[in-house]
Image (cartoon, rainbow over all chains, first blue to last red; front, side, top):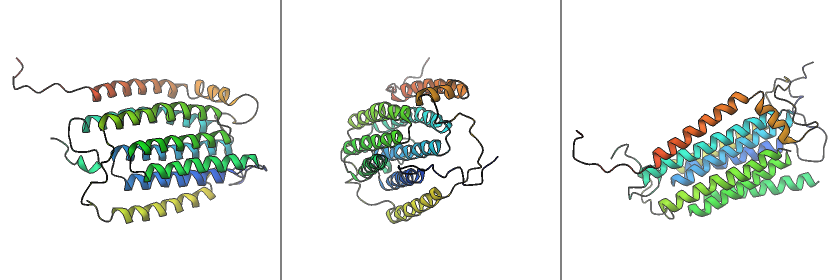
Length: 116
Length: 179
C-alpha cells in the first residue's frame, strides 16, 4: 500500500530534531555559499564557496536518507564526494595554470582575457 | 535531549564556519573556516547515523581537499588581493547578491517544509535495521551501484592525468620551426 503523500516524511516520534531541521540548516548553508560565490572576488575563496554548497547538498541527501530510510542517499553522497575531490583537483589545477605565470593577482576580475 | 545538543552544536560549528569562509579577508583564514564547516557537517552526519560518511568527510574533505586549497594559496601567494581591487566592476552586484540570497534562503526553507515524495519504497536498501552503516553502504555500492563505482575509478584517473597536464610547466617558446 502506498502511503499518502507526505506520510513518508513524517518523522517517527523521538526526542531528537526532525529531518526538517537538518534541511533548514542545509538551506542556510547553501545560501551562505551562494552569496559568498556572488560576493567574493578571490578565485580560491569562490571555489571554497562552491564546496560549501556541495556540502549543503550532501547534508540534504543524508537527511533524506534518514527520513526515507533509504541507504541510497548516503551512497549518492559517497559518489558526490569522489566527484568533488576530482573537481577540486582539476579546478585548482586550472587556477594555478591561469595565475601562476602572470603577475595579475588572483581575483576573478583579473582573468578577463581568454588568451594572452 | 542529547540529540538536540548535538544538532545545535553541529549547526553552530557549520554555520559560523561558513560565515567565516565568506567574510574573512585572508584566504588562509577562509580555508581554516572551511575546515570548521566541514567538521560541523560531519557532526550533523553522525547525528543522522551516517557514520561512514562522517569519517570520509573528515578524512577526504577536511584532510585532503583543504590541504590542497592551502597548498594552492601558498603557491600563488594570494594573501591580500581583494582589498585593492580598486574600482568596482559591477556596481549592482552586492545588492543583487543580497536579494538573490534572501530569495534563495526563503525558497529553500519553504521547500524544506513540504515534500514531493511519491511514497515508493526504497530500492537501495533500508538505512536502519541490523548491521552497521558501513556494511549497508558497502552492500549497496558493491551490488546495485557497482558500475557507478567502477566508473568512479576512471574519473579519478582522468582527474589525475588532467591535474598533471594542467600543472606541468609549459615548454618555453622558441622561434625555431620544428624540422
